[in-house]
Image (tube, rainbow, N blue to C red; front, side, top):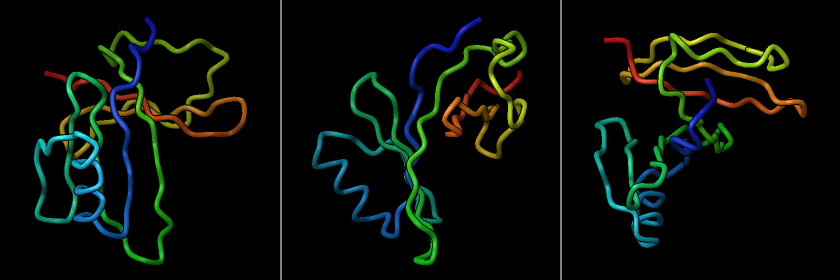
Length: 114
């Protein structure tokens, strides 16, 4: 089984409010925000953007998340380096991390188990 394209873009920022307004000015709509300076935005049926505020001493990061329909049946090619196998997240999904040939880390996200 293969991935199904880009599920999301995860961003960290030093200012949640400014980052959310930036994406809203580009046509994204707020799906939800949390009480800890983070939230999710969407623009149509494309990948969602999740933004989380981090302390000033942390450099803002960008992470592209690939969609996997079912963690139980997904088997990456043996040439793919699995850094962490699928694990449950606190936000209701399962995530796996893999490393590409240039050393970049990629997140693969699947729905939570029923």
